[in-house]
Image (cartoon, rainbow, N blue to C red; front, side):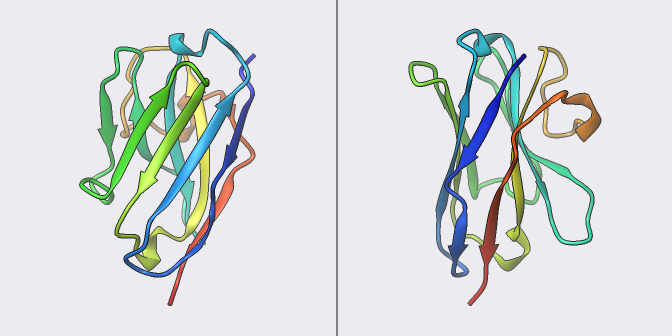
Length: 125
């Protein structure tokens, strides 16, 4: 089992930045594909960024150039740096994990069996 806990959400103005963190409970998390999903109001959950076991990353087109996913293997923590935030980034953000293979931001939410509780990000002026 993998337990995930997100933190770092909050309110920010358009153009601002936030950094989300995801603490993983298992030391062997390096064997998992990790990703960030979000669910915007009245929308389905969508992948935002993925971090593969070999360090490869992938992003949804809507966040490319603005969001960066990274990992601290010592602290067992996954990060999502979000810059130049826009109102359409307002969503609940989830840290997720799955066994390796097809680790991209094109994966459907059902491909990921492990989910955190989520952290809310609100972008408004």
